[in-house]
Image (tube, rainbow, N blue to C red):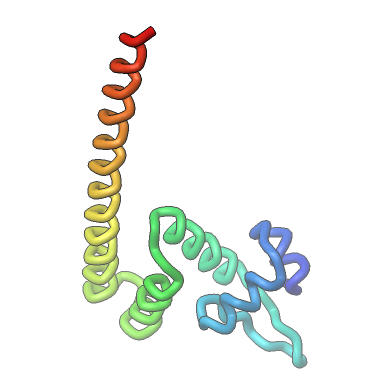
Length: 118
């Protein structure tokens, strides 16, 4: 499919697609000097967005895609790499959660104290 159809399918912009191509994340085939996007490219795009939603950077995604290309989709090395990345992201989320809980407790305490002054 042409880029215009691909953009509609994944609901993004041409600039985003080109950026992902520059990063070697989306790799359309070239047919007669034109890019031809496939279902695989759509799936890769959705995988990128899903990884970003849970906090992965594009650099993280590049590393995962590189492992996928060199070792295969179900390789132990790829799976271990994903597990390591997910573990690091989970640690980060847990830390953020603790910080938010602390802030919530402080705000609640402050509100109770202020309400007593009314």
